[in-house]
Image: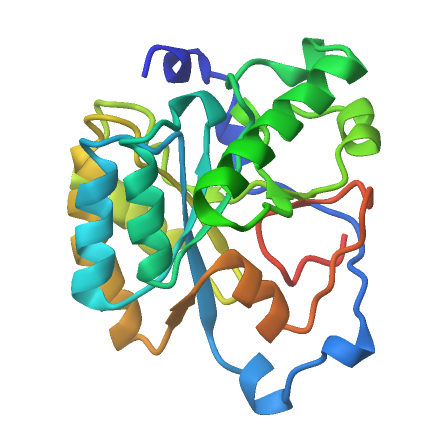
Length: 243
């Protein structure tokens, strides 16, 4: 929670992270009727924990929607790993959000590699699956990180939900105004972030009423026919980005 208060410079990044052109592998193309669906992905940063993560999972289970969890490696232990196991049982996926949640632009190549490797390994230890996506802490990136890390870089469309003064209604209103087909929504299941849980309870059913289907970030790429290449320099907030 403390580190999130240092995010004063993030709003320009969180609401709209831009990218360059995407690559598409024809063998992975999906039928046109599937790419035409209105699809959106929920994603959560900074878990797992035994306080707020289970509340988020309760909402996902209630409304029968999956999500993607970008976890911090040092937060994972025998107890918190049970939240990841439950998430996977609900159709969710677990991805990489670094090991220490430090400013990686200030790290050496070796330190960057260690942040990714250690988190990948502990996720794989408890889930049996190795991550292929990475969300940079603080959305703090530089060319060296893109050159060093082979994972697909993910940003997202957020609602400033790391700011404790933002009410559930404010978070809901921001998401409703911004969300569109192909978006990756950036939220946080950090300990005590109950306003986001409340906002989800309003947001999910309303988006369903509007014809949206919730999928994981991996499925969002797949169903939109996008196969991101390694080291492509793109920071995705929407899988349909072309630049």
